[in-house]
Length: 418
Length: 134
Image (cartoon, rainbow over all chains, first blue to last red; front, side):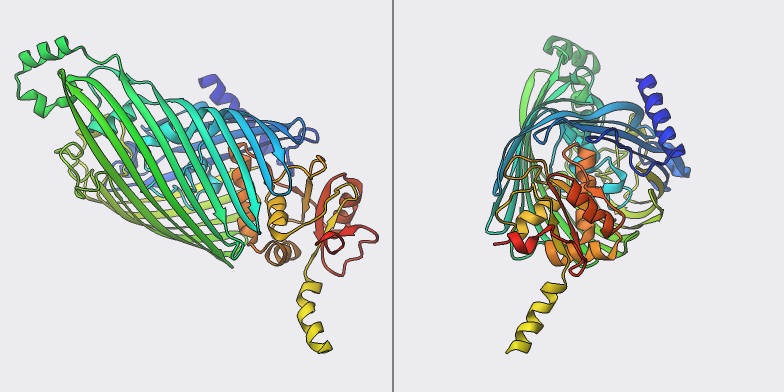
């Protein structure tokens, strides 16, 4: 992995040294990429690790992608990304997508095709491009809907993706259906569920299926509506046996199951349904975007052999206004809210902990801007002012740090893209 | 009456014109179809030939005028759609030409090509949108 990472770095450096106008490999192949280096200062709460408390440069993203068109119907595309975010992402290179795309029908009103391989999931307006600096309004995509807990789980699917479009009376409808599996980083799911890692067992793989619709009405082509549904399910593999859990509990004393239930987990199954409604309005130099998410989680948790079911609805929404006064500058302001448990807006017992009592919700303002000061080079700035820590990225050891209710972070990034 | 007709047709006359390569055999180009083509969402003509889209740079005034008046969207919307496709592996950006002269040359010489020029730019016997629009 480290070798792949340095190859990506070397290739990207070579691109910067020799900035050709376009890296076209023959008529039908191209190579593109980006490098993004950020400085993040989060004086109140550790953001992705404690280094950010004093300001940290450990926020870096590299990407390299290519495609080749074999015929108008058949194309191949792939992308490798390395992402470092202090403790939450290690910078190892990974395959972001790698797909074969076949357009099997296309006339003036209808197109339909299929993609096989690892395909990015269109969930809401931003999920598929959340790791692409140039496609984000600022440093981050909206924290409320695109919070970190599920980022890897729903980023892409290894499987099949059917897509197409319909044009009728000047209206445009684009659709996508996908199904498959994805390996997940167990720790992130464990932190989402318990706030700490579980004693034994791993979440290895998630099963995903989804639908995405985007509609642009004939009456106003500056308006776009989106609907995303994504069903995900995962099981805890190789958990502690019931006998072992009961034995451990016998030694620790029965009260410990209340204090540290994560140490006696003998089985977990989670079903999640994401539903996101999206709307965007572009007029002249302005882009207004709003999204609303309901995330239904059905958790079947077995602690020391005793099962219980818990259903939670997570709710999030944001409103974002972008202003693009010139071709090379943009500004944005965004307000957003996230409630991990909609029926308990300050956070339930399962969610909050002594060191992090405000983990159940988040509310915040973000302000920022981008300036392409030289072709391919962009500087981005963002300031975020938050209450509640629901979207504060979790990292190993976070349970030992005390987390404040009110916290701000400030970021400056430099991006090169070709 | 004549003056009124002239007045109303003036904005359309002065809007940039769409130009096509001879091999792009199409019967209709309504604005949704046209905007899907320039958004790189449609990859081939009805006759199976690959669509080759040419544009001027995104910051070019004529490009912006074309996008607003012909596609009825904003130039930054197109930029974002192309960027998104490139970095999700689902498509690509069009070929960029530096001038109208180069545009005309590329449209003439590239099978399946589509592009645009200003309304009054001489394009000789190249097929323009008006000729094929229903």
